[in-house]
Image (cartoon, rainbow, N blue to C red; front, side, top):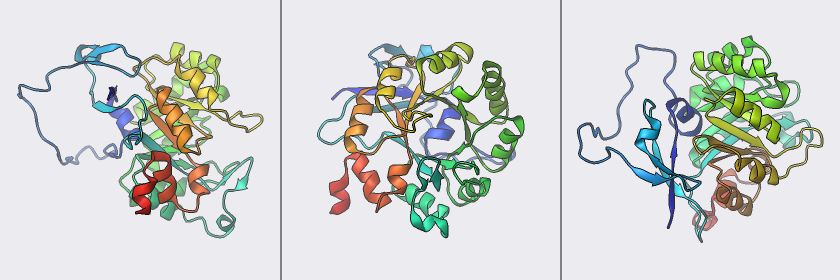
Length: 304
């Protein structure tokens, strides 16, 4: 069975893996819970194909902190459950309003986040925008205090102060919507987030937006492809299938919106997607546990 490897830099790990970045306390000594292979004869290099079949060696990533991740290039009868899942804590949306009736009086964001953590989500996306999504920065802060999971602050970032607020409330990463920002803003905001030890997810909807990121911010690590049309609010996974082909193999591709079924996951994996941001289908499901298992193709084990 063919395998592929993914390289994630240290900051990208904060967003996609269930290992958060250390906080601002530089005096804290992180615990080491792995095997130190310093001086070992093995694991000194590799020559492996990436997701697009290009041969890669350790020399290609000289000077970078590197993680080798093995997964699957396609989904056989039982698709791998190692695909990175970013689960979204979301109360409402502009098109649907409240996602569940009980949210009008009881939006238990901590329970939702704990369920995501318990059932294996890799990271969280927390809606903090108040005007359109009825979010709040306190959701992010309390979730980060309660759970050892990296979290994306999902807000419309348009001013410097928002980045300081995001970091102060525990964000490991922020979202930059390319369609809403000028090139200078993209460059400056990316630099500011990096300075504050936060990663950046660049959200694109079209080839011209993707090209702006690749041309203006060549060091961008995470490229999000939002399948939702911002004018009609309809979703089309074809957007990911189309744009993913244009993204260099050293980037992490994250598909967003419209991911509801096992078939969607299979097709996105085959298109080269490394992670999926899922919100409404999880929030509106009768059981978060069963929905995550269904998307992973492990429903039978849950039922048993």
